[in-house]
Length: 328
Ligand code: BYC
Image 1 (cartoon, protein in one colour):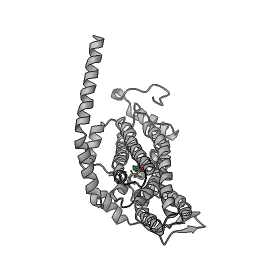
Image 2 (tube, protein in one colour; image 1 turned 135 degrees about the vertical axis):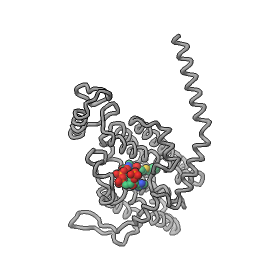
Image 3 (cartoon, rainbow, N blue to C red; image 1 turned 90 degrees about the horizontal axis):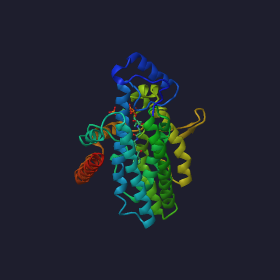
Image 4 (spheres, rainbow, N blue to C red; image 1 turned 120 degrees about the vertical axis):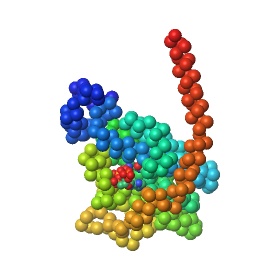
């Protein structure tokens, strides 16, 4: 599928100036760029970076929660958690597929993760210590994900925007299940309520950092917004998220761990305290509490999955040979 109103020349004999004008016009008119459309190399590169890192985040993001499947407090909680972790695997797959349409094979993208050359979300480098952390991850981490990702349903690259529609529907179920875990704990014994509060205390700051560095220190934002890959800046989305979670936290009867959090009548938003950006940059450079463990697990899972990839390749070869015989 392409947006081309008139047939555009193929890449080999493309007139770059005309192609660029055509691309700019699609962006201006808020139409989608499709895989067969001409696009500037830098657009392709930044999208491949963002979409593949998003995919890696979904895959690594399965680890903190998978850790609690065997320890979920009831059969129902276990079934819900398994479904959620499976959803994250699915998100990873849609996103790798979307990234591949930009021209880099999935094996190569995966190798960049395994080699430590590609990033994944900072949030998954924090440990999930208690059952309440499943609530905090669902409510805060998936909540931040929705805030960031709903605008991506309108991102300028067609395959990415379409993948995001289903992902956001699933994330919204994830957020509700997280809030409900915390709500149940908050209505329980004083120890359970304290466990919920403690989980919020640990995940609040890292969840706000998921939106990326402050706008002034975000090297990619300006161009990504001009290309309508990003629809809102990191700080705008972070502010929307804070405004959303304050009343939700009040409904839980719990507190957000920020003494500077207060309603600002003039701005029509909540003010909140400075985040620990030194910690954020250390985490994305690989020095968070769980970076080494997350990568070791991912490499181990990749190695253990070698036989599945070999079996799938052998089956595909057999099918192709059978199809050739049938044609001959
Ligand atoms: N963690 O110029 P900036 C999920 C990097 S999955 C690590 O603002 P950009 C979920 C950034 O990549 C959540 N790195 O960049 C899954 C860049 O470095 P590079 C993942 C970060 O791209 C399972 C540098 O810092 N969501 O929700 O304009 C279970 C400068 O930043 C982070 C997505 O990936 C971070 N938090 O904006 C539950 C959403 N922030 O690449 C939940 C799609 C920044 O130049 N991605 N960096 O080496 C985006 O919306 C954007 O890529 C970001 C960053 C807002 C994350």
